[in-house]
Image 1 (tube, one colour):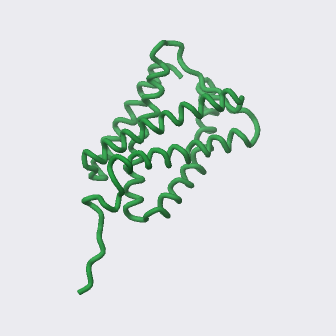
Image 2: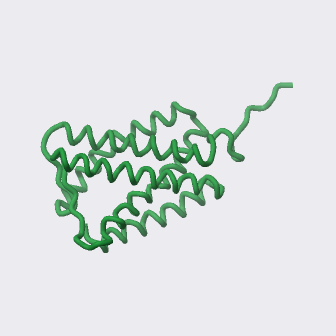
Length: 171
């Protein structure tokens, strides 16, 4: 993956973040929590990439410049829009909604990465077998869970938010 491709990827995520902040009507505290969740998820993703490369399950090609790895981490950290969406899901559907969201991310994530690897083999190559697929799916689940947990830690539970609906009191 070239430096230019990484920068374009980061810019696309920035546009997505602005749109999601607007449509979810997230307050500054929630946005800061989502950004912190993105950083935590970026660290998890970098660790998963390193671990799975060491195990021979996949290989991700980085540009050879000094700043390509920090730029790649910045792109992985720009997953913050996901946590604003999980906030809305948790506010509306609770832990069951988060479970479904996490499951869908794990199920869709691996085929998505395999399609990208097939289209751009110079970016990523997967080893044959089931282990890389399961590791990729587990990474997606971990990214959703960890990022949402960090956001919740910083910004509080979704149901306590100012936009949360509260049941009407009888009476």
